[in-house]
Length: 107
Image 1 (cartoon, one colour):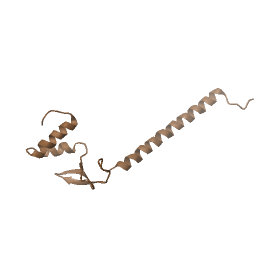
Image 2 (cartoon, one colour; image 1 turned 90 degrees about the horizontal axis):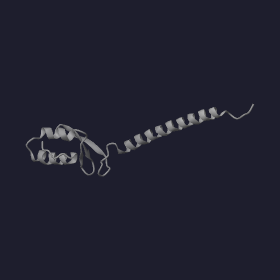
Image 3 (spheres, one colour; image 1 turned 90 degrees about the vertical axis):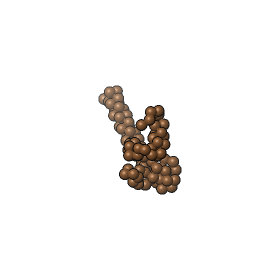
């Protein structure tokens, strides 16, 4: 009897080791992505300082504590425009929003 395992046994353990390594790499990637997300959470995209949630015309918006930039979550800008109809703000901000979206139509 030989001490050497059979070829099938070697393949089995090699596959199991590869699966385990793949799972560990995937978990490490998820952990790294989560850690990176936490470093950016509530940080200003322009200057990197902290964002503070404030109420503006009935909406909660994020304002930078350093540069005073205002950042909207998905749908907040549209909600703000729905409430403002006949103002210069609506006209200018609406045009900017359409430009960002790539739409040439007016509201």
